[in-house]
Length: 536
Image (cartoon, rainbow, N blue to C red; front, top):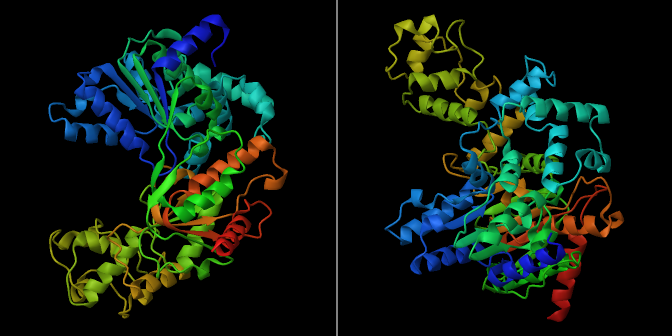
């Protein structure tokens, strides 16, 4: 990072005014950063004299919201320097157009023939927003390395080298009208901006910054009066995307470790240390649990064995990669669990559930609206021609606001079914699995209008979150056995599983696999549980 005599002087200068806050899981890192903001506000520092950067708008919004609630004299707009790194950099070039991630990239890919003009939604997601060549190119820019060198280093190459260089060249031509992508914003700031001397500079999730983003940090930090960097190197799980945790560890500054975990009970904390043995290059952190819950760790060979109904509270069911998550979702549906992902997508098609609800209202003698009929009819086979869609001509004689009951729908609105049970009526677009799944959940009296208490997603998606109970699927789908990985690869993998384990507040559950690629969670947990029993 910093070299030469001048760089050494800069390093000393930065060290004297910088504080690196290591926040192990559940130790209140965000709370500590907000307290730092509040302290400086009380000392007379104005909001515009502070910079607070984090990775997500959600994290920024939370910080601003909490500060504004305590300091009534300020409004949210006063904290305009509280932003994501990309947004902060973009503000300096407000006159330049920004590449729209959807419309502009669709145009690029259709212009250059990456996809056909008649693309499907799946094409858009896979080929446009997840283009392998552009991902490698962007990663190289963030890592400050030659894209071709990074291409050559990739173990699995999805395109030939000439195809890779062609799309990069075409992409840069496409941006010739000074349109910036997210990485351009940071590059341009680093090259062109001379930042003012901010009184306070705060960086959250510092372990996940890329080398390019560290150039931004160094530039602002040199001019700032006080610098605070917060993160946890043990949870550095984005090196696959160009992040470099070594930059955080090597950055000059006074080190503080938050040592009280309010989330982890003693059992989960001690087991997490079994994973840390695979991470020799780390900042030592002596922290302890103040969570009085009696923690437990369980292992299973089959998903059906897991006692979801008997353990109260929230659940994270986590896979290492997306394919594993899809497996877990299928297991959960077979068991009749109601769940959602971190984006709020529920475990069922909401219109299918609404169709069931509307039909049950009708059979109970109640009425439904025309709009509700439209949802219902989409899933019923026995509908007369012209009546399936409620905006068809056949519906002209029916008043849009007229309450509709079952008898009227049969007599006047094309409904022909003679059945009463929803699973016999709703036979269009409903699969056998759908029928079994909904029936199972109805028997269990699931309230579908409420958020599910079970989240099924990747470990990466829940970073920063917590749940009462956590299930980890030890399957990895990684292109080599864990035992054959080099030390760097083992550390990267261990950090992911450590992050998953430390989401748990009460109990940890591990599902084994006979897949070739797996992290040895079950064997580690079994050994740990035997040790606990012997120690008693």
